[in-house]
Image 1 (tube, rainbow, N blue to C red):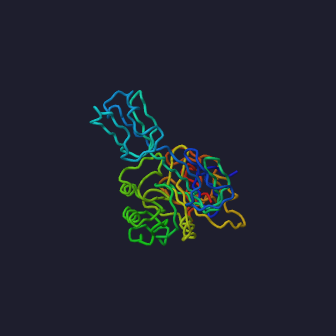
Image 2: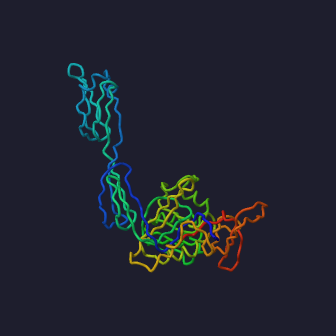
Image 3: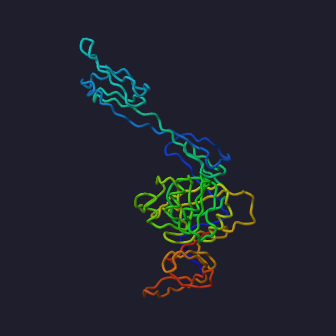
Length: 375
């Protein structure tokens, strides 16, 4: 049978998407199964223990540790404000008393007669988890979080930076091959998810940050421009926690490379619609791709275009992207899957496939040099 399996990026106009939203520590779930939620809704919350501030009271009062408890004005469990008196020394004949005031607000957690230390615990830190996806709660994980489901248009990118953000889709470029330059970013794009075409330039990204754009999605970016945006060279393990002031996603690769026309047209068909975007990328074990998720109407369709596809299945007619030179970034359809290994230009043997481009040109490349564009 002429098919094979290969990893790929998903670009589909309609699929059922689920996201698991959980707290880092146990807390309260604020919704129930069947509830409809918006992307920005808080679905679970908890409180992390506040910061600990140790106070060496024995040293400050110049007394043995065992005498500290008797000099404490504040007691264990008491809530204090910044500037409140924590302890007062007895002084000499009632004079020359030494008062120690708190430099932080919080709660007296412990007073140790062994070390003379007083531990002040800061106020609990609230932690909230948002829905991220506009959809329906289909599962509640007690004390942890929820699973949310929706019908969406879903696009994965090659690489991204920045975390989760939201906004209406706004087309900045008219063609998938048009470069995203500074003049295409306008003040009315504040809070939007901007879609470019080919390479996004550093100057365009900087202007987008000034304007308050939520995210930019485009075909490519030069690594020098990315360094200018971040102010440092990016590592290769995992992204998503950068504090660049914007989320960036490239759909094709680094350099002057145009967004796939299919991807551009899918985004264009949803312009004005609210999208959830996450630039987090992991390219080693446990691969994680950046994503653009656009909730769509739940009205039943005749059939999902991708429903018949088996994940990773490579067969004649499948759309693929070539990920090695000399055809890097080009997209075409699988034209043939020869069953026998072929001799490459280097003299080595490998399993190959034929890819037919829209121009009609057909090339033969190793199967390891393509990735599937799943729909």
